[in-house]
Image 1: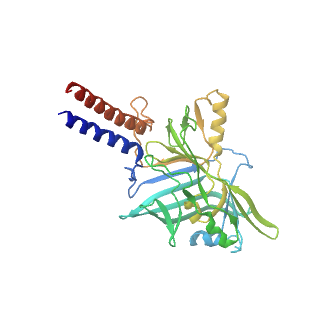
Image 2: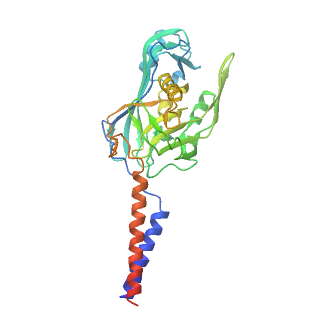
Length: 345
């Protein structure tokens, strides 16, 4: 009997060690299926200031055909230079899962811009950049022409977060257009971002903890004659710790999805969120509530878990609770095994 108890204790200890050292296998979230969409927004308040606008630089060769034709109708396009889109209205960024196979998901990326000025002066009431790109479900990377472009911006796997150095965006593909730049990679992973504050979004309110994934900072330089781009590019995104869905972007920078629809640089500022954040400061609530003036979650058909107290779309500590519960069960099993060993001596 004593021999059997020792064997049981050894097995339990082995399982405990493995559970602490083995990385969790990637599994798609419950909501990842055909038809799922997630939509983000940069909204303009009513009677906004004329100086409040967003700007995106696009590269003609990377643009979807219909968007290229829309811009060509109002402005002569130089295919060897970037185009600046000044956006004075609302901006919407949508990710939709349109097809899935065993190892690939097709993601339709759509950027809708309202009240656009092409190269600062040629007006377009509405401009849409949209393309379907392919996500490899074995390495969770977008691929194009046999090359990994980077990881999805709109979600992460909370059970298997990216390691430092993981590719976020392969910006080096822009070198063929004579850009000086480097790839964006994971440089920071944090659970303490706004760790005591409710996060407001246009979709709803969320509670901590949040997952922040931040990148390194790289140059993006291109010039010709009197025109050019001389900026530093970085990215930081905030995710829901239950579902892995992106909630907001302190700094969107670039993503593989934006790059594939032609965006090479951009300022993304939610002016409505900014005004609401100022109201929180004025009301003395900024120590416990927050609006982030980047791309904010606006709409989705994902069903978030609910808490029993507020029915808000959050169950903040679910993964941590399950992990703690697992260790508690294993610890109790070990203690019982030890007691049995002692009683049988």
